[in-house]
Length: 237
Image 1: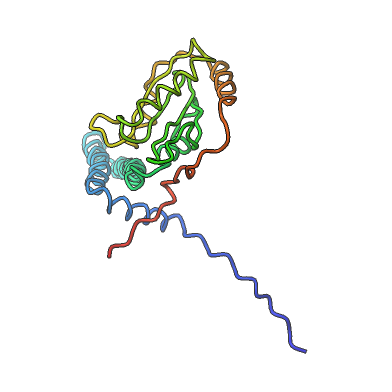
Image 2 (image 1 turned 45 degrees about the horizontal axis):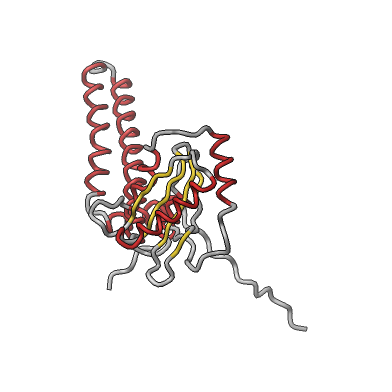
């Protein structure tokens, strides 16, 4: 009798940490021309500082000199990785900027813990795909429009009226993400929200968020936010 063979395919092996970092670096370098020299600067400055401190304080002690230089190298590596992470996030958001659901990706992956937001919009224009998203935090309620301001202002005002109808004492802030010259860049949305002056306590944030959930209706006809950190760089033609 013929032996039965297990035809179950093996799951593809995930790339190692070094390979993942190289892929992130490659993607970042492709979309951000300044990333390489900024990383080089971030690495070089701590190394130079370490060498200078070694020459000033430990010229006659070889072991101490080596430790100073090693500390500078490690500090440079840390600085370069921090710069890479920030520039990679910015490059990733650059790829999805202008696409429906881009703001939802920010609300899902980049908000501080003090903020509560959904990747699904609270209002959508089915024809233009303009949308309004809502987040709640210590700064109150933030309504974020996705699209040209000339088309989204009315949507923002309608959503503000809904919020103030049930929460008249909660401050409402507008942010606009779109093609307008003074619009907030996609990668700056989370930072802009973090700068809003706190007006609510943590229990109040929870209460406001739960109250606003009652305004949500059936799912809107728009795809969920894109995950920019899972996007693969486009291959050159």
